[in-house]
Length: 235
Image (tube, rainbow, N blue to C red; front, side):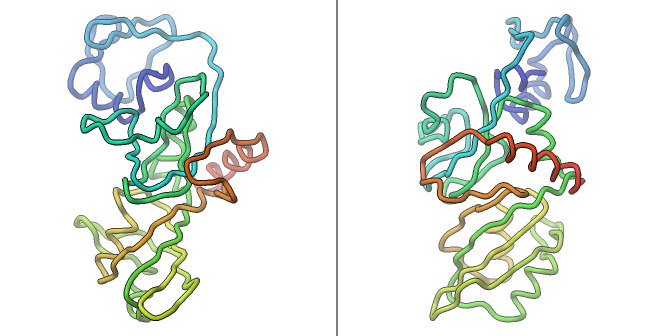
């Protein structure tokens, strides 16, 4: 409900609840608690304003390097929100791309939609164009495809295709169905590969296409319908 109001992202809302800063009708709440529009929600003692009718917005951005995927940043770094000029509704990013990564990033003010895209049980596929150095062996390809251990847990199998190969440089297309923190970079590092460039080019059936770096546009009705269908099929 907090994310749906546009106050902050779902992840930030969960952090606020875990810190005891959110109350529902005067009582502390935890992630997953149910509430309705008639309930009183306060954050740090201030009432959360909830519009009764929302105009849901779905946006895709071609994130350039050098931007952090946050609504605001304590270190005063450039944020992806700085690129969303002329967006009247308050939206937030779905998932993350690290500062040095680029490509397809989605934004919305629809909390349920965002949760469906990010939730581990949905296994929504994401494809990345990854430039690695210096070369890649058949053994490394098998390791990446079969799953490697990162952060004490093995990744799910991935689809890995060699797109280009030249001396000291290889371009891979890697498709995964989970969204762990810096997963592609950690997978490559785990098998001894240096990532020179990482760009997300698709989420489910939605492709980045020819959208220029730093530019954004709203999803079409057909794109949104296909994405919703994929969420159901990839459940």
